[in-house]
Image 1: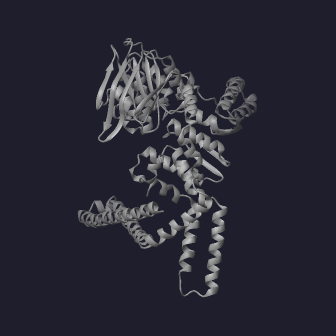
Image 2: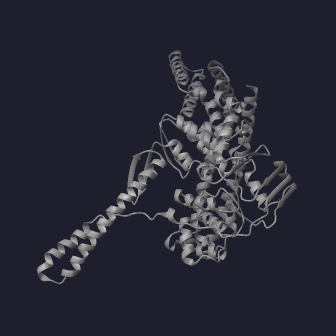
Length: 573
């Protein structure tokens, strides 16, 4: 399916309307119908068309286009197959499906992880205008503060629900912690007094009843718990050799991957001590530029010069491949840090959500996110005077981000960060470089200055009017007529093809089930311990697999044929 089709097919009411309309049209084509029955079907079709007018059916295509473009897709992308997309872009398609279908409630779990700043800001505006309820889980402080009017906290198995955004929550949390500390001191004092009484009179028969009463009192006490204040964890960068005045100088640089030009004839100078954010649409070349600066890849043409005594440390999601899988976490960190003691390293690892005995886990058993946190900790503990970070906050919670943020603010060297986390960048960077359309544009100010300038520049942008007025391109009557004509042509031209595709999909499902059963059989002791049975099952498995491959190939060919027909119909209309 194309991106547009994937989103449109997910809209339940559209699917139901079109299925009912097709069914009624099929019934009306029956020449054997008597007049009464024919009129009955015609009346139902008329009522359905009235329902289509009352709903947003005729506006749905424009709505989908608007949402997809808001999430960073271009008009040309709409007819691309979803199978061509990376995981991050496929997540945007899933988000578009939710936003398109939303009526009363939207549930979102970390929706900003794969967005750039442009699409993040668009999503904020969309959700603020949404009339229904929104429940979201997010570690993006800017996003949460922009949208939420209530906050739910899970704290030691207790759920607290109160009015206010994340900033309001922090104030509430501070006041609560002060109160809980006072209550905890009083409680501990009473517990000690009770324990002293029990210990003192435990073996006196005359006090046995009172001792038992005090023991029961202790058992009934609901003990106050206070979480460790992770944001007290602090680490500092090692003193490093000062670099030259210009640690990075780029001259007439271009970078292409085969025929795909990413950067074209760019020039850039970064001065010692600058803290720079690289921003721009996903796929524009931010990661490519960060890897070029870090000498991880070479330019197609042009030069990158590293200044005198420039030592670079680089973090990106793929640096986890450089971790030693046989090491435990603390040993891996100790290899790049000979100055901190083991207790100090354990404290630092607490900032990256590794507490207690977690620090002795082997790297090989960690999840992708946990490995990323270990890699980030290693990068931040090196003696480099220039640090390049590509999306460092993706696997950090609020407290961990604050610790890293404070450390980077104090870093005396040169810092380059690729990030869409506005709140994280806000107190760190003093310069923004936008990567867009193969070029760079410099903004001499922080991230808030950049956002304000972008807002000014977008006021006169033709894309803004396209996004806001997509649904006004055609009159309602024209939309209805063209949509009806398109559906009728599509139904006539693709009916048999769709039936064949449906039949093959059922066959694929049957073969998949057979394949799963045979795979399960091969794990059973009574089979894998018998070489004859293994051979028999293996032969059957190979036959099923070959049939399955053949059906998938047939399905793909029919889908491509269907897509060609639909494209021809769309062009003709």
